[in-house]
Length: 522
Image (tube, rainbow, N blue to C red):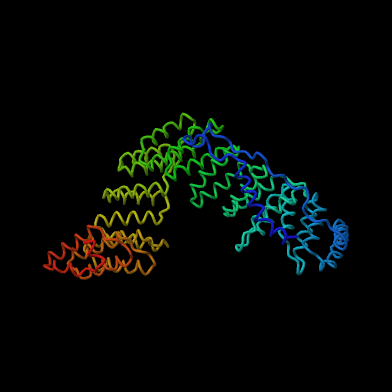
């Protein structure tokens, strides 16, 4: 029977997909307001009927075994069942499960017992029957554990067969539509997002819609995988299918639109939340504020924060961090500092992210005194330092030529088991080049490469410029050759540094000795 399902299933589900695409409307009439009230809802005009019966009837020896097994099962005669265990087959187990489908405890005991018998392996059908029985009894955790065994294998894709088997056995188990909803959620929680999407489409072809909560689980898994574009599209599918979003759905959609740079659509969703029966909360506000700040609309973000109190909402640490970061990006560090003290007056304690933003900002302004003061404040208040903090401090110090102090922080971060990353090495290499400590810069470069970090063009630029200014033109040209060998393109400043160095040393004619691939750049 299983082999028969495997052969017929892919074609059937492909036919279902084609049929579904033909019997539904697919295009909203208005997309400007992020699938607003003028859309045409997508509805299945002719949902496929769920089959009444699709498991062959038991006859002869099979029927005898099933009746005997069931009789002994209800009387808990496990010793006798063990004597006939050698004749177990998935077909016989399926029929015993059907006889016990109204008693989920007894069905589960038999299912577990059968799985422990030597030489017996449960089929997709026996798993699906048990899944029906447990879901119907609202034993969702147990049902999920059963289904996870089937979807776990990484080889092949049992998804279509699982769904079709659930369809075929639906009426036999007197099941509930929730069984498909739970399957959709299991795939979403397991990060099997393509399978989840397939289940969503197949459910709709039978006129069954998932719950809003399950759709939220799917969107959440997509966001964790940075598939913001799919979240935006799926939101449209939800509305077209008639699934009502809740505030959690809308918050995720706003976040997704902001991440994909579609702030106008994010705004459309945000301003229509109350129309959709949802009141914006702090998460909604934060998503919009962060979106505004990322594209430089800090004034609009600040205005939105001030409106939070009108709606009875209180800004949190995420609100202030987004605004402080936005102001620092606009080089309005003084205004950012005002917000920094405002949040503390509001009873909010700055966290690691807050301090990292400000240390980076003051470092960009070469204000080493403020970066060190903020560092001391973090220690006094017991705020955890991380790699980003140390990198910001090291970068600030190196930019100001204080490489000795920067090296001290490098040793401190290493002692705290923080691994230096590419940003750490760049800051140190650049700082040593500025201080004409080319030898130390090269030592750091070698350590960086040895640790498996790929040097970026900006690191080569610091090294080559430093070498040329130090008069070591031969090593400078070799470093340039290595840069090109890594498929990195030198910019005009690198060539200017090399040519200037050659000119000063009276070797301007040596420019013709550049590698062939560089001569076109020169």
